[in-house]
Structure formats: structure tokens, C-alpha cells
Image (cartoon, rainbow over all chains, first blue to last red; front, side):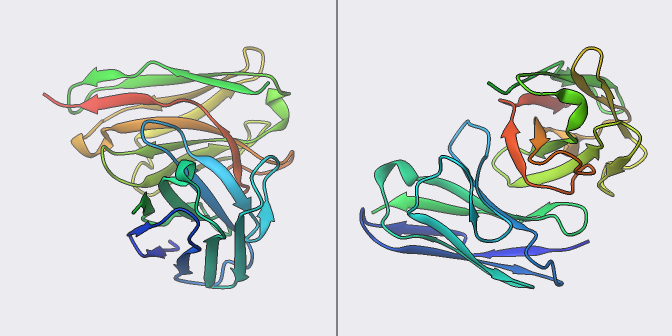
Length: 106
Length: 124
């Protein structure tokens, strides 16, 4: 099984700050890496697919980079509505998710 | 508009069985692979099972293999998850999820639409 390790597990930032999350895969997953946002009590929402592609309708302040085993997700300017938990997910082999990063407003 | 609506959750005793359903609409159901993803209370996401658009290929996480069975009925646009020999650690919100691209195999593509989730509680 491919293990996905996200860091940090939580962060607190001010509105307008640049926020970054890292996801490490236990083996090479190419670019088969997605990022989801989940708000409390809601289903996850796809933000970034194939490491760096913005899903339709997702604001351009969200971005992703990486390949192989090292991936990053960035919110260029944090908005109040961006609070929630963010998950990376690989699908090179059977899907697996990272542990999540909870984003809060300072 | 794509809609996925889960049903069939509830409280079940350890060792018991339950069948979840997911009613799909707004897309050509038979063209898209589907998956079940679960989330234990206060925990992260765990992929459980996937099925190809044709229904001929199915995939399972090791944690549920042999106890959970995924299936689909394209005549009714319905995805199902038959759950047996349930354990306390199967307690979770179960989401059905649609894969993003036609011809994905079942757990082999991003999930672009999710249902609202249904709670399964395994407890005596």
C-alpha cells in the first residue's frame, strides 16, 4: 500500500497569507495526485487533480505542484471561506489519502 | 446537475450486515467508475472500494476485502455496498463518489462528485 504523509497536520494563518501544505508519498506515484477540501459536515471537494490541474470552477488562488513522491499545495492568499481540512490523495495504485491538514484563520 | 444520494445507513450490531445504496443522476451512470470512501468520526478519509463503469472490475481496500461487496445496477442508476461481518472500526460516514473521466477503472481517477454521506454505526 502507498502511504501518504501530509504536513503540517494543522495550521493557523491570517486572511491574505500564503499557505502551503506538503504531501509525501511512500513510493513514486507520478503525477497521480489530487487535493481535496472538506468543510465540517460536508463531503470533500476536488480542487486540484493530476498534481497541478485546477478543477473547473475552483479559484485560481489554489495551486499544486510536484511529481514522484513530493507534492505541494498552496493557497496564494487565504480567504475566510478557505477554512477546512485539506487532503492529498494518490491514485497511482489503489487510492489512499493523506491524514489531512486543518486550516484555521488566526 | 450531477447528484449522488446515499441511503441505507444506521445502527447495526457487531457481526451484522447492512446494504448501502447510492442513487445517481445527472450523468450517464454506466460510463463512469464509482467508489465508496469512508470517514470514521473525527478521522481522515479512507477509500474502501471501487467498481468500473461496466461493473466487471471491482477493487477493495485490504481492510474490507472479503466482508464488503460493491455492485452497480445501471438500469436503476444505483451503486451498492453490501456490508457483512461488520466490526466497530467500520463505524464511519460512507460516501459514494464518481470518478472524473469516462473509462476510469474504479479507484483509478480523481473523484469529482461526492454524495452527502451516510452514517453507519456498528455497536452493541
